[in-house]
Length: 379
Image 1 (tube, rainbow, N blue to C red):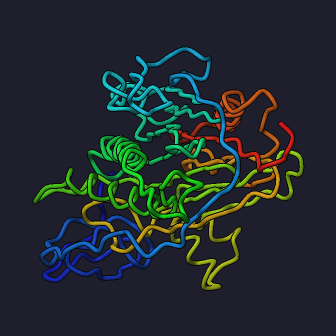
Image 2: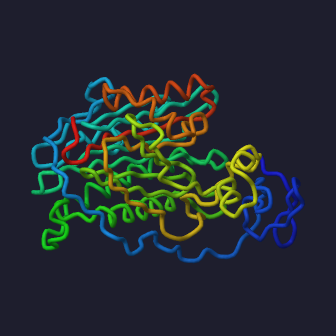
Image 3: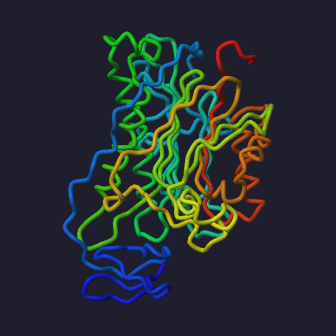
């Protein structure tokens, strides 16, 4: 994408609205239009994304050990781990650094673990897929329970190298989760139900690690590769979601679609315009500036912690995390809930992708779905 505007001694003037930016600004704060490159101030040390979390704990029963990672058709995507690896997802060498697919060949990729599935697709319009996903299921020590970790990152198309940014972010999240599960804190009695792993702290740690990894891709004199970020972690009936940007998480209740909801708030021009009462949602999301994101993962991304929320499910449902290639076409939670299939997450993932493609497939589409069943709920 070319960048319109006029460079001045201080910053760039926007050709669209005339507003002057600060030195180093990449986008107009007035209308979101791209600006020509200007020299900004020396970078300051980035604030870490970790904050003081409230621990998400669960007493839900665990599940049986799961087989190696599979595609949505149940076909193994990579050799499984050895008996001492402590993994139930088949991650390892030869599968995109643990992603389960080749990040250099992702026009279409699928993956599943027991109770969860993921899919990414280039769509019908874009020449390449700059989205990526990660999905893993790991045993939580001696608790007898598992944690499912899913992540979706959407590369910022206006910045070179963002396909690499999304893949690196997802790879880093899975590596961070595996490391945390391998180094629990069994001395903390409050974490006994999660095998010594503080799930909310893990959400912050994964986001921080993803930002660090993507930031390392940048270099002097060029734009920093960038992506959005949303991750979901499920242990029993507890969901912990973290995000930066406008990729979303949904709680879907297929038996009562109208009880479904969005768990995240977009870091975007439209969402902020609605939040401050500037525009009604319909007008904001119809505006050309709607999808200008206000936070992103990159060396030059706005500092501060990732958003993190915890949700305790009181009924069976599905956690969905996705890029805007899905929710641009099917934004309403109830409509997404109606796409959930009794056949399980692989069928659900395909149904959601098909719905986006049939509506035009105007962007890369990536999603992860995880079944959630509280203790005592019917199978």
